[in-house]
Length: 159
Image (cartoon, rainbow, N blue to C red; front, side):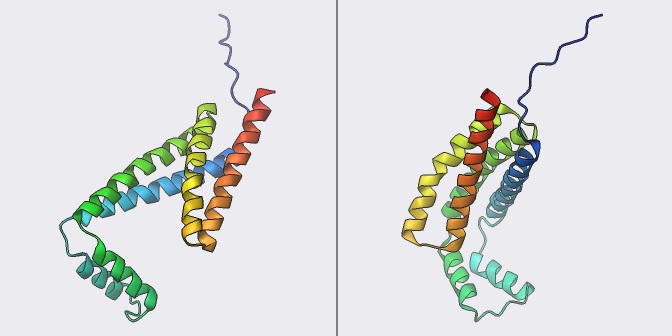
């Protein structure tokens, strides 16, 4: 009986793809948790929930960062929580799709990751233009590095 011939697979640096895949999977799972958390907070007094969390983790309630958080939480309503959960679930689905595809070393996942990540770079630039922070710059640089790496891998695979 003749052996089944394996289809040529995309042989790229598996270690780099796996690192990116884990990064995407972790981000996706965190966003999934955010979406679930937002749904669980619907129809609740968010200021009271935040105060309970602050008490539970024993953070100084007079801290200016905590005051800022409480202020932002106070602006949230059910509609904003619903929007947050929908956006979180959508973006989590994208990230988890990218992560699983990259983990499995699928060429389509590399293209998909490049497209999705590149589409978010203008938003990141806008956020940096609004307010420059080290975190935003690091996120932009990490995403640019991911796109560059995947682009190089795809070019290698073509030759």
